[in-house]
Image (cartoon, helix red, strand yellow):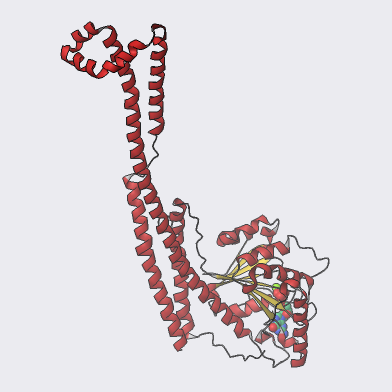
Length: 448
Ligand SMILES: Nc1nc2c(ncn2[C@@H]2O[C@H](COP(=O)(O)OP(=O)(O)O)[C@@H](O)[C@H]2O)c(=O)[nH]1
Ligand SMILES: [Mg+2]
């Protein structure tokens, strides 16, 4: 557990440049999704693909005992006194701390409006009244790419929360990119409620969780600190869900609050690095996701077009089949009529159609006429009705078989092709450009 604290110059020149590139990438990715006309969300919707717009910032959830230093950490990161702190001051509900153009406090509804991803929180009764957002104009560190979620201090016993605090934190954990768990060396380090929640979060999101020994400057000498840490780790390991080897628990404290002049190692810079790392990962994931979604959309368009082609040829076949059956259905009664006329009123027929036609008909229909004559008179009606029924059935079959399904209009097809070209060419090349910018910027960062 070694670590040295470098004095951090807040006006790090590469920082602001980097930030703008990263900010720009996430912002542009976001807008590629949410554009009301050309946005991927909208395009996906039309194709039955539900897409979520990527977020413009990462979310860091802070949990821990009452008075573990969560709010103070946020204030330190933001370099502004955004959150009230103090042993007696309890963060009542959940506070989203984020950067913006002007200092402002928002209510629960406005918070969910600002963070539509967190909409599921509404399902937890009563929580909405305990949600707030604090907007700060600070651009310190990577704050313009981070939203911190400060949570009520967790305590054991009779403490009644006005909403289901465990469920709320579990929901927030689902949506956060990082979950910081603060244990402080004093008093309630091993609060049961905290352990329960940590265990629950760990089931789903072990890779997002980071443990810190906060207020490390208050832990006394190195040996005391080691003892405290051992205790915490032991307590954590007692939980079946948390029993993993190699607990990493950096010791941190807010430098300006170190009033005892303790000289213990402060790994608070590691926390910042972790935040940066998560931002970088998020950018890469967002860009990869963008490309993947473009491919998905292109594939769906291809599918739709080929299905349409298949349907068009199926429709053509159905129509041909329909024509065949209906011709047959119409021919039967005609044949019947002709046979009937030939065998009964030969004279009448020749006067109407002419001798030669009747002769040809006789040649072709002769056998049928003979067959007809073989039918006993008492049955002819039945046979006629039978044949008419048969003809009717054929016509019905024709109707049934010639059913077609709608296909895409020319315009719809053209639109689909346009969509495919748009995602494959425009969006993907945009992604490439953004990726290049990202890489260039991180190379530049490492050169520093
Ligand atoms: N010595 C020292 N005191 C701290 C540190 N962080 C917070 N505190 C103090 O601990 C008290 C509780 O801090 P707060 O941030 O309100 O805790 P929260 O309940 O977790 O939000 C405050 O009086 C802070 O001044 C730290 O790193 N070192
Ligand atoms: Mg607090």
